Image (tube, rainbow over the protein chains, first blue to last red):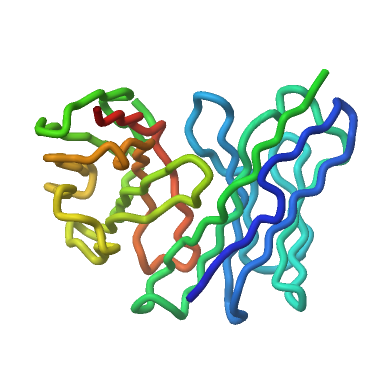
Length: 117
Length: 115
């Protein structure tokens, strides 16, 4: 079955540290890739997405992610985190060739990031 | 209101109660979803509707009953729940299931506690 793995469940960083959150998915084929963020007490919101083209995707708030097809990975990065980046981050993937042909979105378990001032 | 709204935001109910969660999307989308978010577990897709028709029931117990009267509204009717059903229930919408990218937009969720 399709699955999405996020390697780190909890990450603790100091402000200005660099961030990289791992995301790997099973199966190849055509995929659409997403990172969502959930700030404390707020709803899930889209951070960035990859559909095609340049594998290095830039999102909001200085985040970027790189799609490496050969590694089935879509890691999230930020060169310098801020206290306001404290949130839970979810990687999500859809495979258009599965589940009766519709684009079903599969989520990873999430990574909880705490940034200390 | 813009985006996806959910009411109530918090709900506490006993195991014998009947309650309903409501979701409304103001994005002109045709697909709507219910997810369950529990601590330390991935988001679990529960139900999917496309143009008001249910297209997926992800082996959800019958004590959860969805209803989609139109493309803008989605309900989740709850009855005789168990304490393990306590979770955050998220509603989402997307343009439609067969859109090439099918980006989903989420509501704030209903925090459900079953006593």
